[in-house]
Length: 469
Image (cartoon, rainbow, N blue to C red):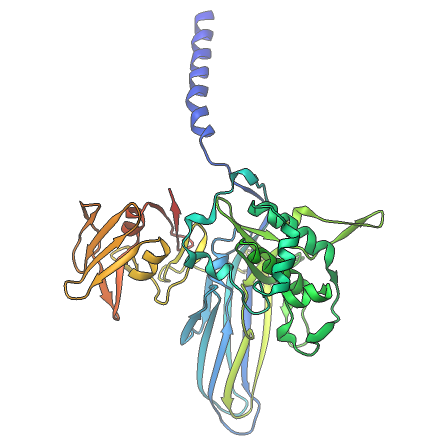
């Protein structure tokens, strides 16, 4: 019996020795999710001829939820999308916002046409745990990758002398990106006073409100808080972006966001800042509270989301719906959130034909040509992917030969050939480079791995994330 116990003890200890090294080497998740739920956001647009004559040449542009930020956003993930009917064209801007264009040739008097846009979300609360010492340098990224999140944009005047001076004052000599973000978050939260009344020189110029206005007046709403923090972050070299959508608890089976008369679930804007090794960190400087009449800074909102949030756009320019027509046409919008699985509201089917979305370390890579799938392999535009990965490219139009050079690698490819070379070593491709619609397209996985990246494919969300080794 004693020998049996000793043997069992040795087996148990041996099992521990085998298990511990495997689990000890696993990379811990930098965040925790809670209170997750699946929902449908249904937008219904009713286009109606309210005149006495036939309306013609009706064109609508409808803003969709931004797939580039929401596909990889752990607290507000778009799972699937359905458009009824399909748009004529989908435009994507530099921040990944998408707009669908619809054309209606004519509507008779009293005739209506319905357009439905459905997005299925998984929404959670999130808390990040950030170790400032683990933050990697931004130097590994090529300027073109981070440029959209470091340069000025409408309402985010990060290059204005007043913004620049305040950023230097707030941050001081701090160099750590997370500690910079904490100093800026503290300043914005303590400096700003929430007010829906507009002040100062921008009175009557709604499009000009934003970071500079917030700094000059110290007053504003969530947009002004978020714009100011993003502008100060960009001014100190920390990539950041504003995000907006709908926030609040969903009680019951559904809730209206918008109908013809009002908004039931409030719209809100907050922001995300980028930390290498962690990705995009959500922050919401708008909320304040007091203890014994003393205003406090709620730092949990520097590294997390404390209320269910349905993300819609990222620094979207223009209106959610715009249209033109000949005749007398009215367009009404209704937006409703439903809980999936309740009263027959079932998840949308997975769409397996959409072009995959590309990322480099969670940063969207948005090219002027969409990726395509050939024989199960993703092809991407040559110059866009080489620029993102920091490789200089030479193209010989006569021989149709491609040579890409990085500091450590030389990659050679030939149009129509499945043979390639990496530092002179022959490789065989599953799919050859090709020219589609006058654009040179090359296999993403081969190029990414050849230039030192890990290529992660998520078939459910149809995303491809390149990560530095």
